[in-house]
Length: 266
Image (cartoon, rainbow, N blue to C red):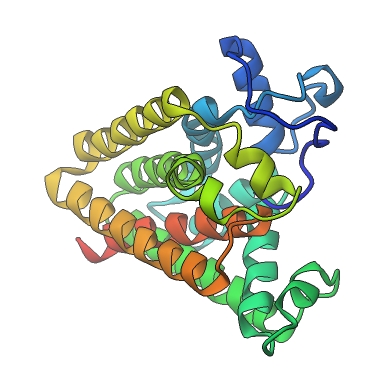
């Protein structure tokens, strides 16, 4: 999630209790480029409770190439899978990762200027390239051994990584969000109910990995999620804020870490 997927409301305040359909439509608008009629989504609905569910759909779409071609062409299948995930999401999280990398690499006092510069800096290019390469290699490593397990891991990673955004928003967002941007707006609209929902979805995602790939792979995915959590915490601590680009970086780092943990468990 990077800045700008939805128009921000002109009035402050936490979200009202939204209907499940409103939550789902808002989550789709946030996490994908699928046209869902953004203008019809109430401005005070964040959609956080459905992030894990939308992540599952994204993961399932990405898993198709792995299931079809993973056994004979694991690297090609992994490339296509990562590409599908990126295309469905409009590369929003990769964009957020790149902008955050530029901010982290910027000289003191120029981080925000670097983050909001529409041109990608060297740190952005290297950061995106490394993370995508890790995702492809890790997924291909598992697909070569068992395409079904690789597909399950991809779905689980998509679920947990998307759920990570509202979890972080609830945990630290109100304290580190600044200004009137997307980060502050989103943090203001993640309540306990949404957090419980995405936590439950994340646990189901890990359980699905365990059912298909076995307990060892599931533990690897959990270890990867823990690594992604540490990486996300480091980014937030270094930036001392959590903006829209920061959420995108969290999603992408968590996704790559889970794939890596699962690959190393084999």
